[in-house]
Amino acid sequence: MEPGTPEVVTIAAIAAGGDGVGRLADGRAVFVPRTAPGERVRLRGLTLHKRYARAEPDDIVAGDGARVTPPCPHYAGDRCAGCQLQHLSYEAQLAAKRRIVGDALRRIGALDLPDPAIVGAASPWRYRHLLTLTARPGRRASAHIVGLHPYDHPAAVFPLAECHIADPRITALWHELRSRLALLPDRLTRLTLRLDREGRRHVIAESPGEPWRSAEALRAILADGEGPDVICWWRPVDGAARVLAGPATGFPPTAFEDLNPEMSARARAWAVDQLGTMEGAVVWDLYGGIGDTAALLAARGASVVSVDADEQAIAWARARAIDPPVRFVAGRAEELLAVLPEPRAAVVAPPPSGLHWNVTLRLTGAPIARLAYLSHDPATLARDLRRLNVAYRVTGIRAFDLFPQTAQVGVVVALEAAS
Picture 1 (cartoon, helix red, strand yellow):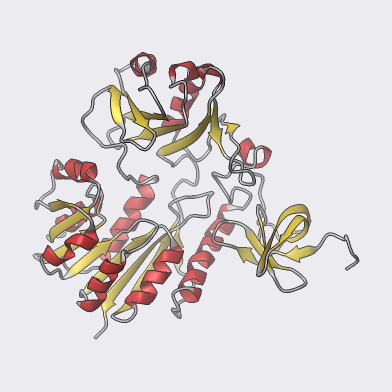
Picture 2 (cartoon, rainbow, N blue to C red; picture 1 turned 180 degrees about the vertical axis):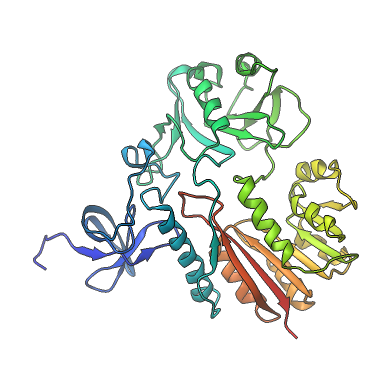
């Protein structure tokens, strides 16, 4: 290739973050966003690192038909970082996610496993119950820029018109808010819109300094025809959120909650099914949140102990009508395992960082007969499975497309203690 001639590469696969990956002439992997497997891409803006490179696609020289036109104008026009795969057909997205999971299991987990089957989403659009926006304050509140980040300029913010993966009720709330930015805090830094499982909408404004004084006025405007269904929260920087307008009881919107409830329910159900008969058995539900998995386990007749560090989530879970009753414990799993009753089975659903080392030590030091691991991060899942492999064997694995149009994927792994 002559000096200065743009390099052309073939995209072999989609990497874990959503970029296409190919090989330069010198053998280095190059990551190219918004490309599809099988495409030959002319590169621009090539940045070389010691073991890899990054570039932007300058021109698609040839393709294999996986590319589609993204419906969201922000995806191409503003290079929105919220989605990574809108340019791929849904079938290509599912194939890419299967490969992402399989690659992590083999490369990081050292497990000889094929790419798992994947359960596609019932609705690849309008599924997300949470929308978190960044704000850049203007000279006055009505001049705020509220939106999302470009993938190639994370410090910048573009104004959001509409998000195509947000639930229509969230989208409608944002449309109502866009013309009323003057009623948000003057120094707004972040705005979160959330739909809870009781049907109410939550507006969580984050800002430094004085509390949000116009929250009640905004809530009165946003109230729907059947009565107020909006609750306004204010969160100071590095502080806890509190209700400023609306009822302070009910579902805790600042606790962790599934972004795609329908698909998350399918993943939980599959995980519980893998545990087999549980009638009368003690079952741990670690990192159990508001108790959805615990309720499924209890319905199978298990004696469930559910642990989560979020006291707000545990308080709401304790108020649920679950039969037989579940013992909900607030605290860190790694600090409580020694005092929990010995289980026959366990479900773990850790944060993206994966299992705490002390939890891994307990699970391997005294293996549990059956274990189900729910993950949103294939890399930390693979790391944990490699550690658990000394005492367990994998009996089943399935991926779930919890986050269509993005590179994220949910995975459930069933394990049993090695004999």
